Length: 73
Image (cartoon, rainbow, N blue to C red; front, side):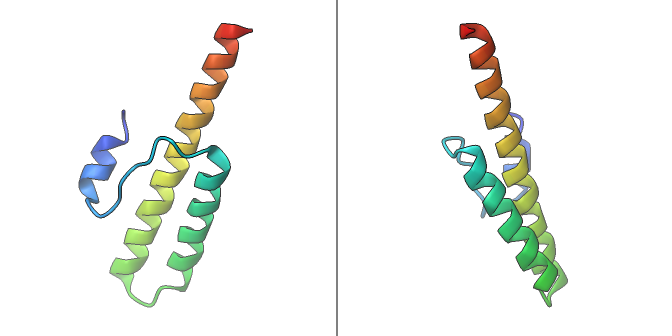
């Protein structure tokens, strides 16, 4: 999985490939909103990193679903 490199950079974050896209999108939005309100720059960067990982996970999940539908369709 391509995201393993990103997860390795942020060991406190684990990629959950079993999540569905809407949950990942919601999580990404929540992380971004928390980052916008963060007072500490390091915390904001960490939260934005998590948001990006959630978005990447969502894109990969959607891509896999589309590929599976194309194979069966």
